[in-house]
Length: 147
Image (cartoon, rainbow, N blue to C red; front, side, top):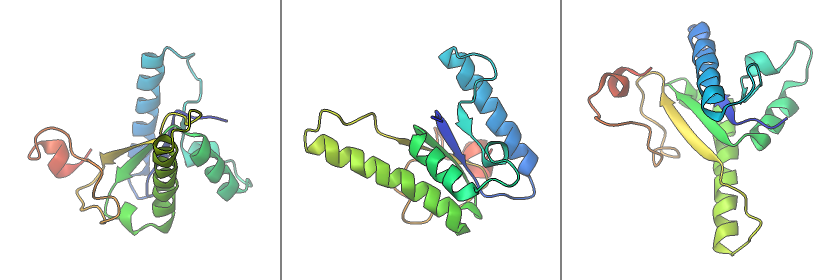
């Protein structure tokens, strides 16, 4: 199944807030894109993997089929091996797109996009520091305290 976005996050105690964020983002995008209500547009592993499913292939497939990676940046996000792998898959897809464009490949599809969300105050690791993760005034509440 193809998704508009893959929600990448580190599971923490405030899990319900992450799910609420995912649901609100899905609703907003569905409205903007004029999709049918209830149509799955995002991948959230707590909703996309059933008990007993093999989770690694499901996540790998969702990562390859999603157009956007929405990452909930937090200190634990940058300590998580799995979050790092999810981020790296998208970064490799972005690099492949760049290489195809440079080579003049007319079949190069739209590039995958990484959209970071500052969930909790943190300093991104050097590998991701080059991607803009603050919006507007660096002193604004969202940029200081997170979502």
